[in-house]
Length: 366
Ligand code: NAD
Ligand code: TYD
Image 1: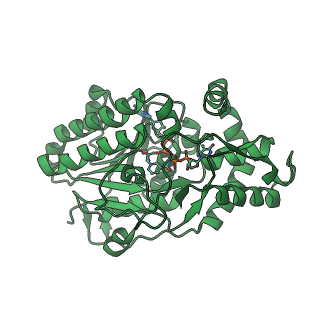
Image 2 (image 1 turned 90 degrees about the vertical axis):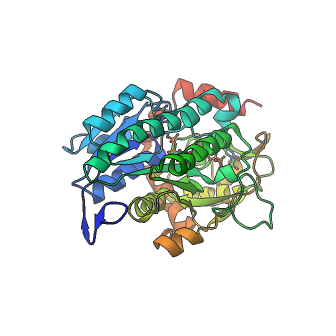
Image 3 (image 1 turned 180 degrees about the vertical axis):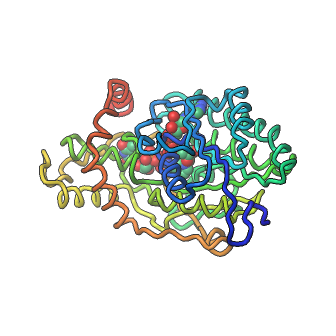
């Protein structure tokens, strides 16, 4: 048997706990896993914050091997009960407060969920882990993290690699950095089989409409201004969310405990260029737009405080050691994403709630 429970070509069914599985990446990952590994037991733990949406998992609710638990990752007793009852051997930890702008408005929840919540999960898994060993099973704790922990790059700096020093600049990235350090320490101190992934910006289906790409798609459809921060020259590396899911699947099955893997799309794009690409796609694909061409809606607004200038990922390690590469170009991925928002108005309309409007006012009022 390998370190991760595979016996040659015969894959042993897993019992996986997916935290944050009702959020954007988590729900894409739950679909990915359920589609591929029908014999696995899949338990989702999610607090259903503003970012969590049970509708993302509606198609799976009736499955025999699926269970949804509404709860908080800071609730140790609940986690202990789930690990024991469900005999969990694999944890895929997505649950987090994930939006930089919200972390600037109110960092408390970020420290609570991202640091204390991750600590609580690690402690619970440390307590549970010996029962797996007694049963002759291996375990994995996958800690899903972000490239933002590495800070900001200058135009000519080399991309982030796994040995780039951490230099987080926002309360969000600082809290994720803290959780990464805990996950790392639990491997080195307690030999818990933790693996960390640091990924670039994701986009795709089920993306909550306050992040750049879904916000722009929806504002174009509604004929509302497209708020671009600062000079629009900030650069992000974009990865289609389904490629991220395949990377995490690869890491769970083939990754080495105690290691970190950077995951990226090889797609560095300036924000203003990305927004222009979305405008062109919408002009081409949407039959009835209130404002045409959509680029007329682009509005430069006050910059985000501490706005990181550039992120870029060197994904050589996951490619050479585990054989993973992204399969979707940013042009293809954006086209699919625009199509998805065009055909899923019933998903995103209800999310533009009073709470959403209040948040929008706070961030964009100036
Ligand atoms: P998201 O905000 O869309 O979803 C987070 C989910 O976690 C929600 O369903 C929410 O209800 C749940 N949650 C929040 N606090 C919780 C708590 N205390 N207990 C239980 N559940 C809780 O986030 P996302 O964009 O899907 O990101 C998922 C993970 O991936 C995060 O850890 C994030 O740091 C990381 N990540 C995100 C990106 C990105 O581009 N979105 C890139 C790299 C890494
Ligand atoms: P975002 O989707 O919030 O992801 P992150 O901050 O984690 O990279 O933002 C992506 C980029 O888009 C970032 O440089 C900030 C910028 N941005 C805007 O210009 N306008 C907006 O309204 C938003 C939400 C983001």
